[in-house]
Image (tube, rainbow, N blue to C red; front, top):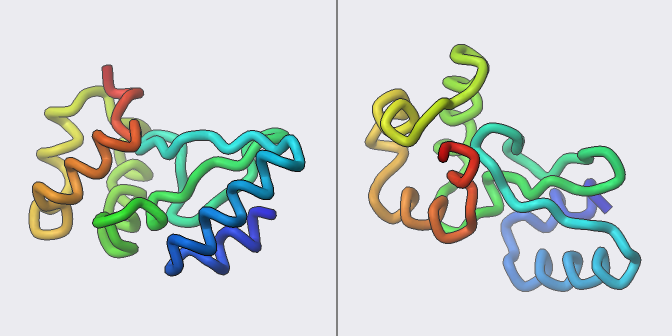
Length: 109
């Protein structure tokens, strides 16, 4: 299912259909998280972690920038560190709002 979700990442309606199928199959979908998610959907134990590129208004370039900084730092500790380390041209207001809305920044405290 992870590969199927990733292949549909550009089509929100098809991602929704696939996520509904996951629920019917008993596969738990974990919320996106700037400290845990990859660019694409990825397995996380018996669950599937939502990919950052699938977040509306974020985009693949911003998702890749987040992963590059996370790889360098190891983990984001707080919102201030996150917002200063990521290039503001890639992470604009709309993208930040989307990250907040889907809970991707919840691990920052």
